[in-house]
Length: 201
Ligand SMILES: Cc1cc2nc3c(=O)[nH]c(=O)nc-3n(C[C@H](O)[C@H](O)[C@H](O)COP(=O)(O)O)c2cc1C
Image 1 (cartoon, rainbow, N blue to C red):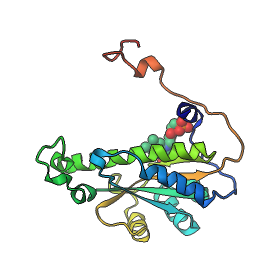
Image 2: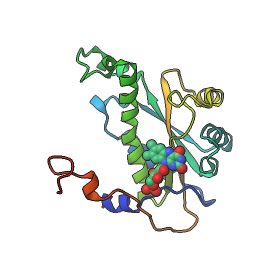
Image 3: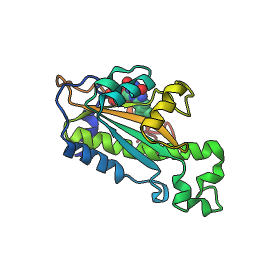
């Protein structure tokens, strides 16, 4: 059951030396490819990183977070601002249908919003294959404005263009020792309301 995977998943930042088979990496990426998006615009690219050079570079980009360089593989999730135009969405005159009419920030937010779904799908597919993962969002990119020199290098290495934003890195690997998830979450009633915030379901 998907809920069991969700309950069992946790961010794992230390990995064993065991390699993930390519067929499993393909399954994870396929789950991302099949994710839903606004009018099916699929405003994303995924770059699989296995080389130590690129892992080290991405580690530097993400404030030296160790799991980036020690993961067996990384999936770099890229939000593609150009996808809307390519899909013909920019022909719509209604901002509720066309994020390009929501201003520069609106377009950025809506594009970043799209990649959340494939990220979630990929993490859960990894979990179903007993592959552990961690989302990495603390890094240099157009949004944070930090580490711009390294970011320019990353963009070049990964063959990214000016309209493509590195949104997230997913680190992947097998855990060293089985661990129980420690789900520190707000209570059900704090986040769920029946008809209105605060009413118990
Ligand atoms: C958008 C986003 C960005 C994150 N960035 C980082 C990060 O840069 N480094 C890190 O170690 N964990 C990062 N995390 C993982 C969270 O810290 C983690 O999901 C949260 O503490 C809950 O723990 P759990 O995943 O084990 O349930 C990020 C998670 C999300 C959703």
